[in-house]
Image 1 (cartoon, rainbow, N blue to C red):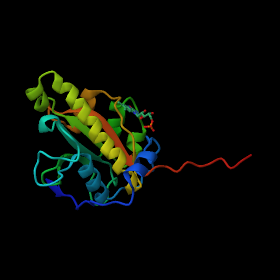
Image 2 (image 1 turned 180 degrees about the vertical axis):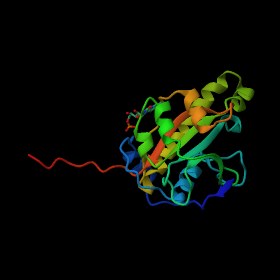
Image 3 (image 1 turned 45 degrees about the vertical axis):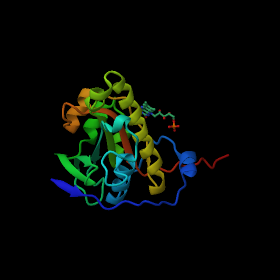
Image 4 (image 1 turned 30 degrees about the vertical axis):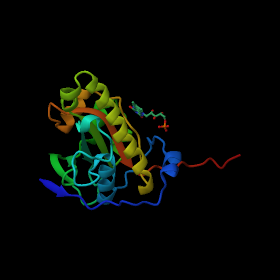
Length: 209
Ligand SMILES: Cc1cc2nc3c(=O)[nH]c(=O)nc-3n(C[C@H](O)[C@H](O)[C@H](O)COP(=O)(O)O)c2cc1C
């Protein structure tokens, strides 16, 4: 099953400089759902098409090999108008393809050394890579390139969450096999980052003396 994503904005109210100043890792989320519009915006910003040519995306790619694939983990009532499940992002059509039904956030917490905030955030974007797309062209050096590319995509998400009022953190500490299993990833896709996304819990300032 495929789901058409709403369109995305090409202009925003927050400057790049402001986003850079505000960027931080967030591990305290509220469970409030996020909109499908926000999901659309984030996936496009992460690694969507810049025009009609699939070789050119919002993140650079060594030799246009594009080894990065994105998965959305939507929790139960995590994303408005989207059932809980695991979805693969298809940049060409700006659609989501259902991979697995149901809320897998608890399993993701177990697979990530019990980083419990992953199950509080209403959704996560999991960045994966198909190494051979790049190593086919660049041999062993391609592994390094893939790791650079994950950084580009993750920073795009870090910056794009802010104008949406959302926050995130790049989680790299997890068991690869367990994450692959709970997302039903194909053998060729290796998980590299889990990026929980949601509204931050406001810090309560201690007003006492
Ligand atoms: C490669 C990498 C792996 C990371 N893994 C985790 C992680 O597993 N869990 C987590 O809470 N934060 C993780 N982080 C986020 C860092 O802890 C965070 O960036 C750092 O504390 C600096 O804080 P800041 O992002 O707010 O500037 C990771 C960051 C990077 C770059």
